[in-house]
Image (tube, rainbow, N blue to C red; front, side, top):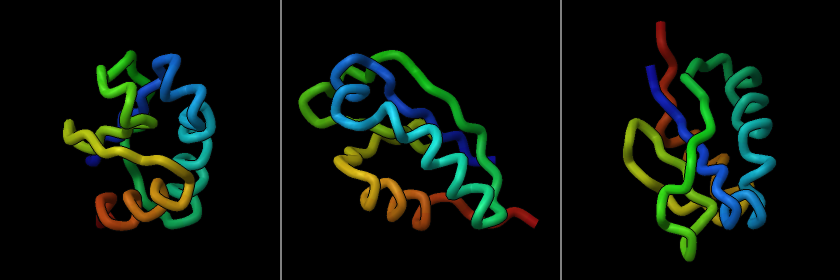
Length: 79
């Protein structure tokens, strides 16, 4: 199962990351996909945030549209 970790450090949080857990949860439900979703402490990429890790790989996700594109390209349908 895909693991999605959303940085909730102060910089990522303030730049819009605060909304990302809800956006991911809704997207997963709407698309019938499953993932382990959790928040995490600072990823030390504050200047590039918000940061989302998918299976341990960090991605710069500056806005909701980029987050949705990341989910579409990384979260697979599991039978």
